[in-house]
Amino acid sequence: MINVLVTLLLLGIWIYCCLDVLRTDASELRHLSKTGWLAIAFFGFLIGSVLWLLDGRPRNRQAVLGSRMAAAGPLGPDDDPAFLRDLERRLRGEDG
Image (tube, rainbow, N blue to C red; front, side, top):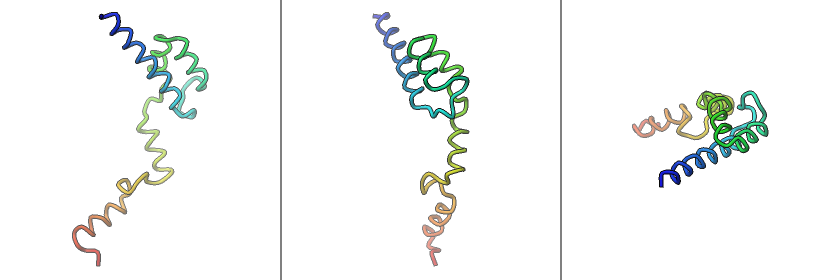
């Protein structure tokens, strides 16, 4: 039974890494191309997955997302400071 659980855990990590390589934008990858990382993660199974997690993934996804948001503007109304100020003003009844 423990062998089945370990096998399922390793298979889950491997699938996660392969999908993560596919979902990651090519400009965020380090050291290799997307095809290279996918080949390493896919054919390397556990070793390839560990290499992807330790060395291939973008180190700070929040910084990457933050730089995208700053360049493209707010993603939604709750990310827009001007909208939030206006909403607060209207909730207080100061919509004049």
